[in-house]
Structures are given as structure tokens and as C-alpha cells.
Length: 113
Length: 114
Image (cartoon, rainbow over all chains, first blue to last red; front, side, top):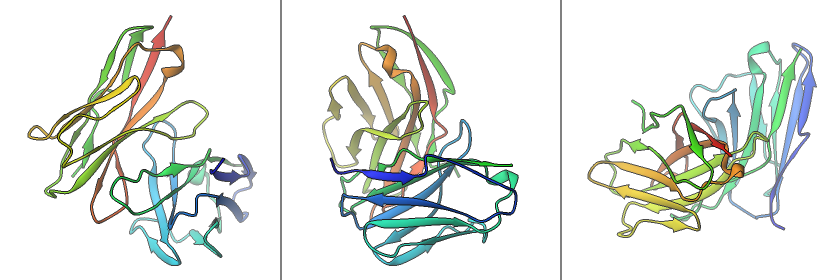
């Protein structure tokens, strides 16, 4: 089945230790998104790629970076995780037609010790 | 300003009954889309239903229907015949074309009681 895959599902890192979260898709969608979601809150968009074009949200901290080496893969790098970065990180993809919804992966739950 | 407002933080519903989740939105665009997503405790966001601003009929998908009142800028989700598996967080979201990003509401937690 076509899908959005995130690895790992659970990630534990130490304060200040860089971490990379991975997302892959078999849907061949143009757009890939990274969201941060804290407990009982709405997802917050960090950035997105339209093909290779990177779009950063204005309030996304510099600590967060992303790479999209090809259509299928997208990575979220957190350079120096702080305790406040502990959250669920959701990857999503979409086409850009009017009707098209975003397809979400299962998320990676990040714990910072 | 908040683009999507969900005023019900949490709701309880009896199994087999219907429940309505409120969503109001704010946009000056004529072309936009409204989406509802379900997020169970496992964390994955599951798309439920879509309503386009030019759609004249209310959207329906199985037990889900969307009560779209354009003049009032509301897009309420109705879940009929609630099941225990419907217990989850529900998010209303809007996309203002040609942008493809979503603006999410704060969500409503639904708990279905047996």
C-alpha cells in the first residue's frame, strides 16, 4: 500500500545531542511537510518542501533543519535538542490539487533527557 | 487571528449516538477547502472528510458528514452511530488556495462511552 513512513517511531536523545528523524513516501507527492505537535495541541508546521524548494515557517527555530535528497525522502535534523523540543514530529505529504488532503505518517515521538 | 476555531475541548458521547463537533473559520478568500482529521492516541492523523468552498452539497463519507454553512463560516462534523473506536482527538483544518498549507484548529477530544 502507498504510504508515509516515519523512522524511528520513538527516539530518545540527550540534551544537546543532534538527532535526525526520517520520513519516506511511496505516494510520489510533490509536497512534504514536517510538523511538531506537543501534547493536546494542534500540529505546528515547521517547514515544507515543494519538490526541491524549501519553505521555512517564520517562527521555526534555527535549531531545526531539513533535507530532501529526492522525492521519496525527507529528513528533520535537530541540531541541539532542548527539553522544549520533546514532542511528536509528524511528516505529511500532498499533491497540490484543490481537493487533495495531506497524508500523514505515524509520527516520531521524541524524548529529550 | 485564529483561522480555525474549535470551541469544544472535550466531549462525551454514548455509543450508537450521533455527535456534532463545531468548527468555525475565518477567511476572506473565496476559494478554500475545509478538512477534518482524526487523531487516535497512537498519534497518526487520519483524513476523514473534505468540503470545498464551492461545493453546493454537504460532504458525506460513511458515518461522517459535514454541515457546511458558508454564510456563517462554519463546517461542523457530524459522526453518526458513534463507536468506541471513534474515541480520539478531532481537528478541523482549512486550506486557502492557491496555498497548500493547512491551518489547524485546537482540536476536540471525543470520548465514546459504552
